[in-house]
Length: 347
Ligand code: TLP
Image (cartoon, rainbow, N blue to C red; front, side, top):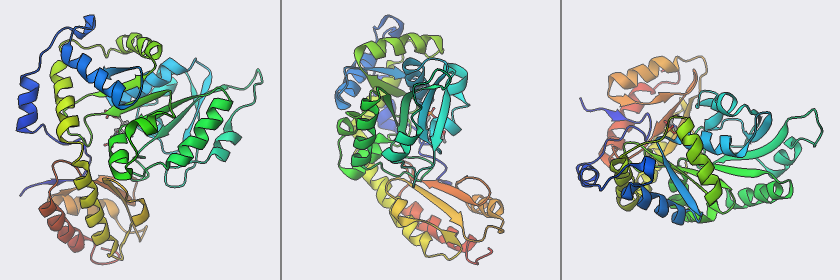
């Protein structure tokens, strides 16, 4: 039985052509700044995001944590949306590695307002933590791949500027946001001091992320990358995969979005499942079961028995993600299996 793995867009394997690009990469010791492929990738990312410089790092987590470490001091506070990835899925890194607290605001499908941010900015009193950084996430993972409206980012950025606050964008899926909205990555990035992007999610590279920003900021990030153990050597083989992914897997993100939409529309017809179709904007579908008493985890196990893998999110919802390894035929087969498992309202 072939597996249809909807757990994440991180599960993709490098294609044969990507493996060739990887094998042919020209490499050097990046500790000396001598890996030509890494340098090429960093220049390309800086250009794509309209920033002075970029740094290749092993993971999206490290990119976010470096952004936080470089732009805060212990005792500072970050404002963010309550279901931000860096808050819930990065092992408490902001507290552990940067000594900062977080002020998390409930979003509407992952999106917060400038008024909420305004309210959360601490007055400059000696006993308050110092509000220093705002972190936004586009697309928003836990909200189901939702795209941030540019106007909202603009408002928050204007507010941040007025208060001397820095802005970081967790752009692990910025490519998805750009492809779906038609807004260029650099247009989003222009409102942020730092931007992290990933090559190992929808783009299908085996590893690697990048952090972009001003030259001086990136030099500081290089120091902390070393401190955090993320300095690499002949990592041009990974950078080559990232370059290949940008050149060959960027436009095809549309296909992932279209397949997610098709599946979401199919599944939304089942009375036992709750899906907000307005939130299905890219490659992620957030699905809740209508009957909170129903055994959602057992249903997820039943899906797995039939070869459909999803990620549980709590006890009554789960996540489906489309990616490079999912084809149109898989969607039809998966829809059939979902229909069987979730046929009755209490399944
Ligand atoms: N997200 C992973 C899991 O950690 C949940 C996934 O399967 O979606 N920012 C965002 C918005 C992310 O979704 C992720 C990974 C990261 C950062 C961290 O990237 P990595 O896994 O490369 O450290």
